[in-house]
Image 1: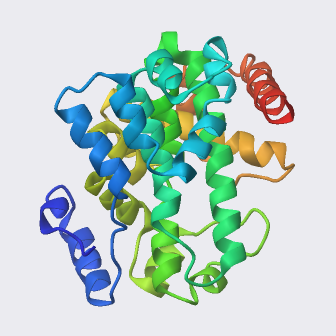
Image 2 (image 1 turned 30 degrees about the vertical axis):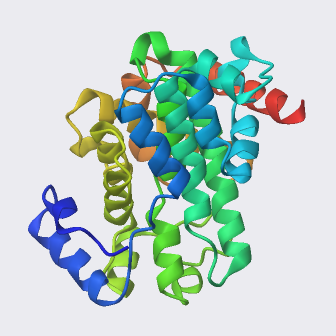
Length: 293
């Protein structure tokens, strides 16, 4: 699906020019799967019968399987075990389940055209960051008012501009050195080589998939927390940045951006220099206990 011009209305002039150049090069936004479109239509009409919504989701066995896997996240421990789709919808909530289905559907909408291993590594990284973000949100919900399903959605979508560019440019992985452990696209280098910004592309994907505005903004500025004034979007970026830091910390690899955003992140999440290490341990313990179960 080509970029809808209506999606460009909140971008700067230079960003619009960059996107238009990418359109000319054949870069497209992945379409929403039919099951997701049907689910969103039902929710928009106010359908609340969990049996009806479960039948809609059940049309895609792959989404069903991943949904049961996602809800094993430690953030949903008070509802576990889940015995059916109806139970998930009842326990977590209709909109919250819809957000989880959105996140799951994204991966299936962008199959690898080449560089299969790079795509697999990308989705593994995104899923881990999403799971960590969900636990962070659960731990800090009373302070931040961001819920696990929202954090999980932002976690999956925050770098989704990367696989869009991977699909279109066969040299993107090699040029951005994504095969090197711990390496991630540098925005300046990305722009110089491809006249592209994966944050802007991710923002457009998120808007096309009708994610909440504050999540769209957090995707656009997740590398630039200082530019965000809206509290919810800023908080979401803080959750994402801490989840990314935990991801690298767990791999015993440095996260180059962390030093520059650390102060903003801990302030936004109501943490402190003394409490942060213990908080990281708590989140990682919950993450590992979930994945070892």
